[in-house]
Length: 213
Length: 234
View (spheres, rainbow over the protein chains, first blue to last red):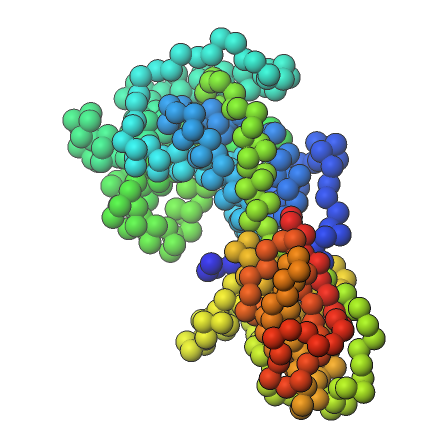
């Protein structure tokens, strides 16, 4: 219960019950930042909107790392609750909401995979059928997927391997050094150089967090 | 920067590839290195782009509901205290009592008080925790005050400028659930804002009420309810 709301006590007033809640329709037009600002005001509809924008991506990432539906759901829920609890401090962070959320999902999933020791790195079979996905979302995601795949393809194989094993496999740099039989310094360099190169390839897209505007 | 210095770890950190001592050491370094924080922020954006290279089954449709319900359950409940009766001025002292408030923390700067007041009591700590929760909740109005119920069901009654009780009287708070009425704390009112940590949990649906009683309090209300807040499930 530490490190929460500063100085808010004295200005506390009144009632929660009459707080206006935004509707899904109003929310659809807002920027991600504006939605997070509403989440900071405990607007649960805004949290639902954030989920509609990024839930699928978050779950896909968590599932890829964890290979387990229940654990992936837990990781996604924890990440969204992390946003719910800390949205008021978000303005201080220099990141896109999508980057923030996906960082939380990743950290949570990696924590779980390390705890469960259930890491698996064989490639997953992509789903051929995408039931329930909106066609427009699907197209946008597909474009972004194409962009990142292209950028990954341009990396030297050993840099790509280090980044993929770390990000999708949840390996620490020490585990990677052991697994790949390389000195730790080599692994550090591969990650650093590879990620820097990836950032360059992605250009402005990466700085914008790639996600929907 | 590709020289084995801590700066180089910004990539591993952004990939969540540090743990244990390495992680701790790097986070310590990060706290004092602005350049590294910038590197990490930009590498995080790059790393997040990797999430898009995932083509997997969509989440179950129940997940959205589950997340929103869990979030709602964490939200504190702040309910206005409404005046039920004109406050009986005759029963009250005309002099604003300065002392003897159950727990008053007015004009405390929350963070600094926690830093500097080593001897902060357990109750004060609980009260600050609950209020910190409620301070996140957007609220308006409520001229008499409010009741703030944390997700733990611990609650604080916030009384605004209630006329001070005369020396032979006290305000008494009650938690009313169904037909069960339980005493939940005594306070004296007075100018300004008073915070009272309720001694009973408030599980919605319930009411929190305030009566004026003889000094020392009573086990069941003997007078009409002056103020009342209805706490409904969020």
